[in-house]
Length: 124
Image 1 (cartoon, rainbow, N blue to C red):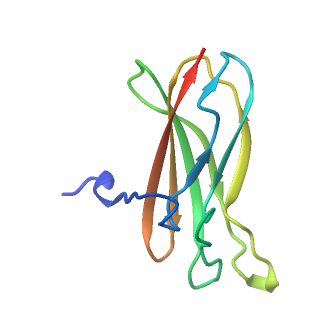
Image 2 (image 1 turned 180 degrees about the horizontal axis):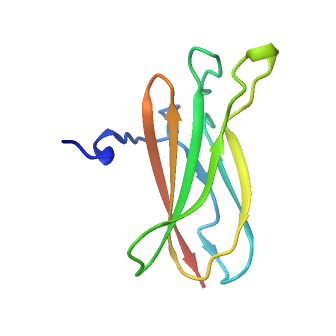
Image 3 (image 1 turned 180 degrees about the vertical axis):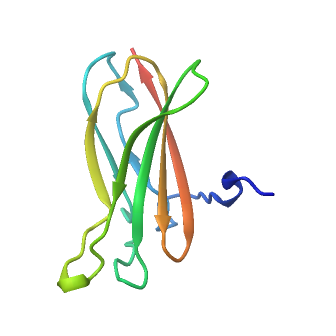
């Protein structure tokens, strides 16, 4: 039996339109809010049609020294052309951290499956 991790794909978001891009500072101050933005298609636009779209993002933070990551957010995109309405796979939230660690972002394309990216962040 294969674990879910076996199906996670990754790559350089500048050359692969499915990899979630994590926009966050390299460093932040403990307890100070910063904007965390996750997007798809910063360099290569991803289609946003009923036939081919990004369905969701999940974002986690794994603090250094902790056993498990903590879910920051679960973002679902549901308008893919119904009624001529389209949503773009971009989300933003404010986050406060007290420890350094790693932000993980997952995206799901209805045709090309699961994609992941990560970014380390230092908390001073």
